[in-house]
Length: 90
Image (cartoon, rainbow, N blue to C red; front, side, top):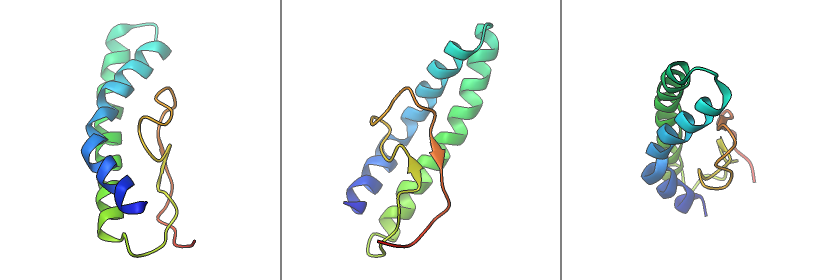
């Protein structure tokens, strides 16, 4: 399962950019601020989700907990992604 989520997050990490633009435009009164905040946060989330997926691919043999929450971008598109520290375990 970990290798599949790794592949999915590497392949779909770029979707964090439009996701964050949409989320921040809903939160902000000004479209300029919403777009700016969405692009900046989206770029950071894109790097983090893609990096998390790459880390899952490299360490697929090691049992770990999922780093991003939600684990896949489409699990809850209206929730801003969060990232936990890399933790081993079952």
